[in-house]
Amino acid sequence: MHKNDIIIIHGTNYKEMAIQVFEQADVAGEIGDTKKSVALKPNLVVAAHPSGGATTHSELLAGAIEYLQAHGFFHLSIMEGSWVGDVTTSAFSAAGYQEISRKYNVPLIDLQKDSYTSYEAKGMKINLCNKAAAVDYMINMPVLKGHCQTTVTCALKNNKGIIPNAEKRKFHTMGLHKPIAHLNVIAPNDFILVDNICGDLDFEEGGNPVTMNRVLGFKDPVLCDSYVCDCMGYSVDEVPYIRMAEQLGVGSTDTAHANFIYLNEDQAEKGKFKMTRRVQNLARYADPKDACSACYGSLIYALDRLNDTGLLKRGLPLISIGQGYKGQTGEIGVGQCTCGFSRSLKGCPPKAVDIVAFLEENWI
Ligand code: SF4
Image (cartoon, rainbow, N blue to C red; front, side, top):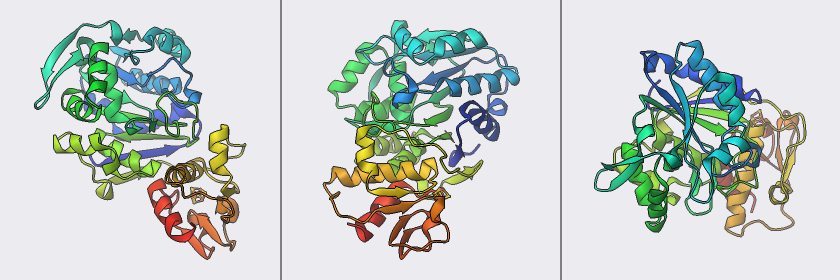
């Protein structure tokens, strides 16, 4: 896999989707020697079930483990340190990881209880948990979601889970952005499997999940988080730690020259989307007909951006979205399926950042 590759798969069989992303990336080939230790680093910031939009789905861990064990890797572990206000062992239970650990005989490691060592990270001293630093190959498994302080959170910020609690507190007193960027100079990011199944609208702790039903694969954490900005309707410059990490040589923000590898096409959502009241309030501006999850989710994120700037108001025409509009005409639509409409945004699915620009110009 190249550093500018972005692997995308849609669906609801999350375990199988994870396996397919690993196969496409040839992670086993890259690790090489089966004696090497491999760790999975999910996001368990809080003790909460993944359906709430905060934590990594256990099915993705199952997929990663089945893939690795099928390729002869048995020196595996799942490691995480929840945020300061929560206990990692409770988070392991709430997210269903105890069952995964038992089923596959893979230990759970609570990094809140680990010792640590101080490292020089290009002008900043940062303490890193020893067990995380000792791993031969680290698979970062963040959730794509919003964050009340840093706007978005994904690969770069997920590495806050491999530092001790005292260091996490220090990061907050420093305003998060600069230390997160420097942390990623020393944090292992060998492969990144992103849980884009139902990450939260704007809050790290979850509560307003947005169904996207996607899993993504990256080598570059900066490219990953830059793409996350596109997906949630932000510009990279609204999330300072991403550009800082690029300047420190961690990776590239250049999504325009990324190589997108689509393993399948999105499917129209058959059942009703599960929505909290807040997400429903955004969805009332849309008129979906057989919309695919990632398409509809992108529109929800875009509407949230417009809501942030006070641009949503009553009386606006409903935005058509979904495969049910193929071959039809109408006023305004989002996605390739509405290409017969007088105002329509191309893309299948379009990114939230493009939807925001389109709606600002054509709808409000
Ligand atoms: S444009 Fe149509 S087919 Fe493409 S993702 Fe959107 S709803 Fe699905």
